[in-house]
Image 1 (spheres, helix red, strand yellow):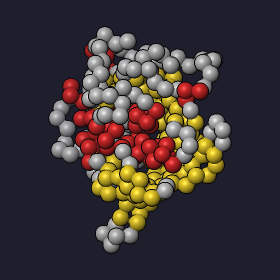
Image 2 (cartoon, rainbow, N blue to C red):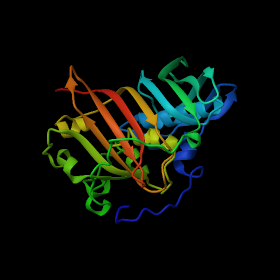
Image 3 (cartoon, one colour):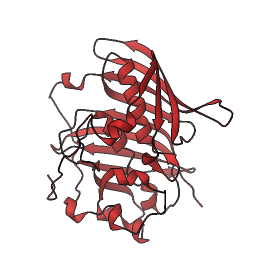
Length: 284
């Protein structure tokens, strides 16, 4: 546990994250939502926030409540405002159910534009056995009071980082060279992570956590938007109360695309989520 205690204020089910990811069932398998501007980078809605929304819709549509694995293809950038989600049950079983979902918005002529499409398998995380055999180890991040968040840097550009107001991020100083104009050249990013209102993590906020840190491209020495092309997340168990630790690495940048591999650890030193995403970068 970090030296800086993490005090829970909001609770799971009663927080800004829950309200902003809640979907309204219009008809069987069809859901409405108003995408909040509070989870944007520049003007685009964050991909992890979108994944949590689709995750909630599938939890309602499927007989199982917990996402085990979810793969998303980001087709066009989502904007704050009305959206509709359509789900389809692919298969239901005793321990796992599989479904797919797409989120649509509307153009100026009222035509639907598909923003994101996912395929996911759901189950019951509480039914999993306790047996763990792993060589994975939690990342070595300094105590929280020795790390730095957005509030420690210069004032952001107006409207550029609304999502950071809703997050508790404390970044490992060894991955912050980019913020000082001296990127290390290593594709690494590590941080303590939580929601700003103190809500503890659950499987749906883990879908946000894997895509909420600054991109590893910054520490490689690149600038600008790094849009996600595809993101796959594995939820391994329910996280314990308290802050998470997120470690993201990139080993290969080629042809204007890079991968980001994320591990998420809870306060009990358990690996609670893993992900890999393919993202596009600007090389000039």
